[in-house]
Amino acid sequence: MTDTSPKSQTPGQSTLSIWGGEQEHELYERSTQVPVVHSVSFAYKDIDTWHAVALEQAPGHIYSRNTNPTVRAFEDKVKELEGAEAATSFASGMAAISNIFGTFLRPGDRVVSIKDSYGGTNKIFTSFLPPLDIDVTLCDTVEYAEIEAEIAKGCTLLYLETPTNPTVKIIDIKRLAAAAKKVGALVVVDNTFATPINQNPLQLGADLVLHSASKYLGGHADALGGVACGSKDLIKMVYHYREINGATLSPMDAYSFIRGMKTLSLRVKRQNESAMTIATWLQNHPAIELVNYPGLETHPHHDVAKAQMSGYGGMLSFSVKGGLDAIKLFLPRLQYAHMAANLGCVETVVGPPVTTSHVECTAEERAAAGIPEGLVRYSTGIEDVEDLLADLEQALSCLIT
Image (cartoon, rainbow, N blue to C red):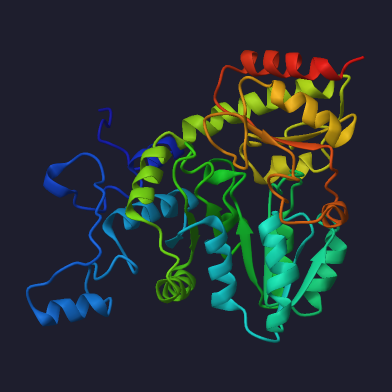
């Protein structure tokens, strides 16, 4: 007789994008969608129950700066997609980064990281942490021997970002996490560019993974927030720092993220395919000097990306002949792209680092990080790729003499 009973299996990414975190919560009045709970506080009919909830000895919520039903549902959805034990959220991606540093770093500690990190993160490393007597060493991004040597000298926290913003370099998470574990360092990875659909750093040895949820997780450029995932013990520490310092995600933004994440897998897979097509096309264009996309076999870190990613992402960057002056001519001609300081949404978004990822940095600082002034960061949307290619062709035609 054939066994027709249902088989238990781990849900796929599309299923988790839709159902993740929602089945654990009893929804209001049998609603099928997570409601937006705007209440600042939550009332109890007896002191004992109230006190138990406040001490986290019983389920419930006390005050929305601490926890909130809508926010918790968003955190649980990300947690499941990243394969983490726990997650906590923040008012922005930079708040997630800052709160992690605030939780785990003390005077005399040492951070090892890379030169290619996002400009805001780089500014924390170069301007904010050193006055607190926290030593920061920034290494050439893929010089593994150099990074491992610096870790071996003593390291409290190893901070990685892969793919990097905006140069789209790929870092071997597993290799560097192993080096960090030898000295007891905490490994933190910014997974914003990759998303949980393309990469899961916790499975590669990271202790904490974070996202600017404003980007791919939300996907519609209409909500601001951040999130960090990891073990229950680590996230509990980060949560308690955040609840006191107050960088709280709003319920409305959490709801927007939940709604946006229902199509995360669909969006990212479409963006992966389109970005690969566009990167391949740009390689052969006479106005383009260099294309940075890890899916290309010519990318210097393609083999690492192939080993640790299931998709290469929707982000690419390329250098234009003529530098920033050429960019100023061609970008305004694009019809299907916002010139804006954002990425990861359904619309294509473009811009040079001088106005986007590294606007906080000087030209000298950008040059030191290996970021040419003639670089364009291109966040591929979900438009028909044929239209995006035609748009690039007509816009770049002004640079052909």
